[in-house]
Amino acid sequence: MEFINSHKMADIIHLNHNLLSVLYRFNISLGFGEKDVETICLENNINVDFFLEIANLFNDKEYFNEKNLQLFSAKLIVNYLLNTHDYYVSEKIPEIYKLILSLKFDTDSERNQGLIKNFFDEYKKEFQQHILREEEHIYPYVISLQKAVDTKEVSKLLLKKIKENSIETYGVEHGDIEEKLYDLKNIIIKYLPPPINGTVSNIILSKLFKLESDLNQHSRIENKVMIPVASRMEKEILFNLKLNKIKIVN
Image (cartoon, rainbow, N blue to C red; front, side, top):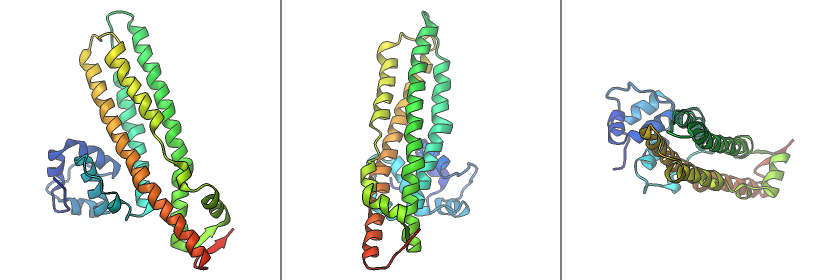
């Protein structure tokens, strides 16, 4: 089922509770009564078409209209990606970490808990380094391209980056952190003894699988949407520069 703007927001949450995470990324609070998607988006200054593209993407794994997504502004895309980072760091990672700390074992409980805790600490560290690189270097670069296109002015520094270190060279990769997440799941599934509170380990695994799926979607949006949009802007800037339709500034 593909959502449209006339669907009631409450109905689409009932149809797929995973969309609650989408509400978080758009800073939409619950308690919206019988209002439809378009009304909620307008009240929250949200681009309704962009919201629906993301909602449909999370509702159906087979749905990924990259051509539609590439029509939105770089600023809109980057803001969404930043909100997604916040969702991971503020909500999902602490939630999983808290559950890991609650694991108890019959024998060597401290050592077994320490094993998975230390592994997750390493994962968190790598994950934070990854998103820091994106937030300090890649995302600002994309936003600066948007500004240059909008103002018809490009700084010498940005022009140098376009020519020597274009967006394609970044190649936003998630391989290492995805592999570590897979290893973490395997530790719980294969190598740790059954915990006393076995339900907790099942909940942890469920949340890790959901996080992995979410990260895959995040990666797709970066690689299939953000990078092509940025690449298109780079080409537009260089082309307009040849036609003297854009000015070089300090």
